[in-house]
Length: 218
Image (cartoon, rainbow, N blue to C red):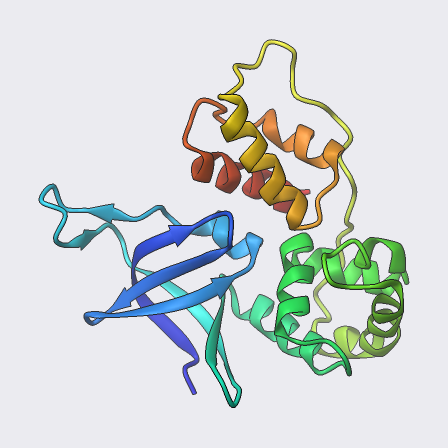
């Protein structure tokens, strides 16, 4: 079982929330949460393009083994990894749904939503219906309280919009970034609020990462 990976980011796809991390010359393909993605640096190569540079990062991982595939799921913190494992312990919740939920909520935000029985917010995660969200809220309430006694903050939707004087990127970049964030379950108002903290003239992956960083702080 692979529990952690320590190396440099070789490739990063902000839209799909996947990356390749190179460890001792081996590149591992990892699916990550939006929260984790917001904490990771972009790939950096030597001038000749042959070597990966930049500071190494550590990612906590969960390895899922199926008959037809072996998948790695990565997390910025051990807390997020343990929350993922709690989620997949619920009947009917697989890794994909768990990653979707943790791309919408930080561990703290999810703990608050579960404690409040906020089924509506949980069901906003793509691939998670109302029945599954209700089951999660019911089954995880005591487990989260037991395993994460320090968690408590709230999850609030920020309804501010981008300032009218902001410099907008090309329509294709903006549309791509908005579509990626929408696919992760964020509302239009949340996306608009996040854009006010972003360098909207950057590349689309940079826009997505900066927006995710702002969204995960709420």
